[in-house]
Amino acid sequence: MKKPLHLVVAGIGTEIGKTVASAVLTEALQADYWKPIQSGDLTDSDRRTIQSLISNPVSQFHPEAYSLRQPLSPHAAAAIDGVTISMDSIRLPETDNHLIIELAGGLMVPLNDQDLNIDLVRRWELPVVLVSKNYLGSINHTLLSVEALQSRGIPILGLIFNGEPTPATEEFILNYTGLPCLGRIGWEGDVTKEVVSRYAKAFRDYYTEFSREYQS
Image (tube, rainbow, N blue to C red):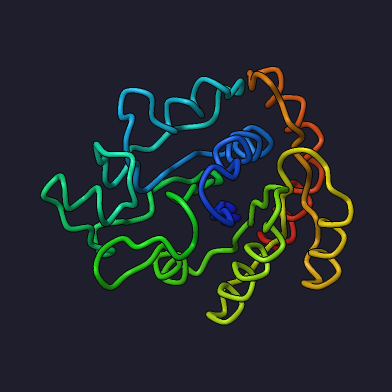
């Protein structure tokens, strides 16, 4: 039996567009979705947002390992809730389907006094899709994120650029890192199912081919 494709969607910071990128990938692959840690806005969590944006009947949406009430870094939100986040308690969902895993914040965000998001990613040994948003300073943040992943031996599938196109920025990042661009998501005033489906069609061919190679 072919093994399903599991991907980690990581961002170069907060409010980068990971959730929209995760929705597009979930729809493109008709994958399951999981966000291990949700901080803040539990009535309108990222899982609920993704559910509202997916059109296919296949995807399942797995519950969070930790749901924290405050919109803070996981370690700080957990402290307020009287919880200590343990990496041993964050187990990959059991599924025979492809799985998109969205991190809470950037790679170096702390989960507790010792562990960071990137430590969780390294434990899983899964490929990463890195989402970069075009803004002043994004080159620095993107290159630092790439270096952090590579120095730990974490495989990077490639980059998704989010927001208004900035060719000079994108070209430099791609040339310097040697990583492929997996897709671009432009600025959208209102992200709807139709918008996600449109991007998913553009992404689907590449990820379907990668899935075949991954499963072989």
